[in-house]
Image 1 (tube, one colour):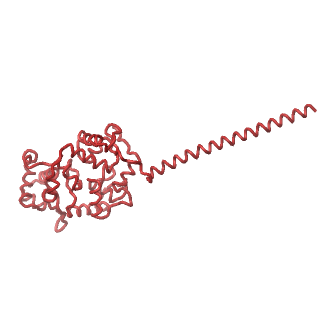
Image 2 (cartoon, helix red, strand yellow; image 1 turned 90 degrees about the vertical axis):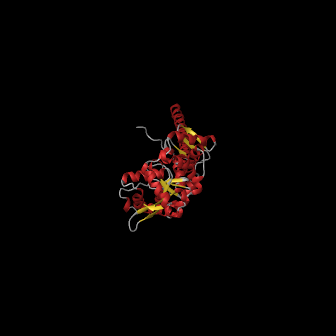
Length: 326
């Protein structure tokens, strides 16, 4: 099995800063979470350090090695992440849905047109690209505009739970339907609505496919500093060829530098002067210089001792010869 390339320490430090993986930058409120998503462009919800890319859960933990526990219901950080997600959905300023490959993601409004250009389904294509169950669910939402999960299943006539879930996931992936609120009383349920109703300007804006690939790659590289083979595809749901097209477009713009196959670095990225990695490098360099200086001094001292020893031996031999002559 091929091992994944290691992320350099200066890049990890860069990501700690931009993805809020530090204790001084952890996320505690919905407003903080919205600012975080606006700044980086897009982020996953409940992924941990075992998955690449920015994550709201990791930002809530404020550390790069955060791992979801087995029982997330009892974990305070996972609970806070879930609560913040509910508040973000209700506030309606950030796009949230299950997108490509079933990835639950947050999108900043500026990134919505680019994701929609790649995965959105136009009305003229719905009959060919959506299943019968998905079209039935969509008809109800266009009539009711907002409705709870149980009522939506009843009104759509899709009685099978698996078929209903698959249809709802397909509509989210097509960027047609989004959750609008989460209710816990009297029972737990989502309210669903049309994405065009919440983000009309962003979803009506048309961009080309090449532009969308470039801007999604730009959004990731800006926060990551460096991308290794397959990383952009895993984070966003793009295919590897499409991820490569996006990264190469950044190189053509002078925004990125290609270091090797699938490896691209932010062109303007400089080592963090106050990072612990930089400090360790300076300390190690200073230690090397100190060791060399000590070695030079030790060699000099040894030379002086050898010279003194030679003088003493020469004096001893001369004195011995004088005694013999007497």
